[in-house]
Amino acid sequence: MDYAIAIHGGAGVIPRDIDPEIRQGYEDSLKQALELGRSMLEEGRASLDVVETVIRTLEDDPRFNAGKGAVYTWEGRHELDASIMDGRDLSCGAVTGVKTVRHPITLARKVMEETRHVFLSHDGAETFARQMDLERVENSFFDTERRRKQWQEMRDRAEQEMGTVGVAVLDKNGDLAAGTSTGGMTGKRWGRIGDSPVVGAGTYADNRSVAVSCTGTGEEFIRNVIAYQVSALMTFKGLSLQEAAEEVIHKTLKKGDGGLIAVSHRGEIAMVFNSDGMFRGAADSSGRFEVAIWD
Ligand code: ASP
Image (cartoon, rainbow, N blue to C red):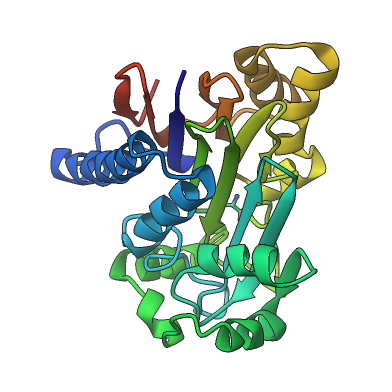
């Protein structure tokens, strides 16, 4: 395969009888993001640029729980997390608890490229964003009516909402990259951090094996170091990408925990989940181009 891309827009309970218009909206959003990534790869653009650009688009899309449209914390605000990883040399960058940065994925990339650290949090991450001159917005910029309702309902009965975004890419040069961006879980408290900004748990990329982005109940993905586990199963146990992805999602994790998308160094794509559904899409240089929500 010359190039391949897989994207997700979160996994979770997605009722099969959702309004056809809402379903169409999700499918259109996924198709647009996928086509953007596919055309960049066709032009020969680098995997990291594709990951960042496609995630920025999804962060701007209010349908997804990343950037605009992020879920609410317990206190009714938004705290955003993101990470990005370069499969060429394992360089990576991540941010957590960001409140005013419009595109957290870009801040994560800046951490990777402009500092000697890999993970910045809360006020420090904001200060760094200011220094990097990134676009800043009021926290209320990320508000949406739908997520506000979920938050209000959540305060009555504990419920978690998913909808994170992620991208995994193999470019024409043979380089892998992955990234993930999220608002986390509805009603999160006390500076809670999920898997999405944690390299090895929610995101991983190594040119020798695979690029992975996960979505679901972050605590389970951290405990089981899921994204890295896919790479380790391929590297140390010789499993195929599909076998490794199925092993972690169906054997390591429990039903309902979530899913992942992944692209191998050969351009194979896996999109596996154990929840009711996962918003996802896949495209490659053979002409494959598809988006799906359920099985
Ligand atoms: N994994 C994310 C978190 O735990 C949420 C999600 O993927 O929906 O923060």
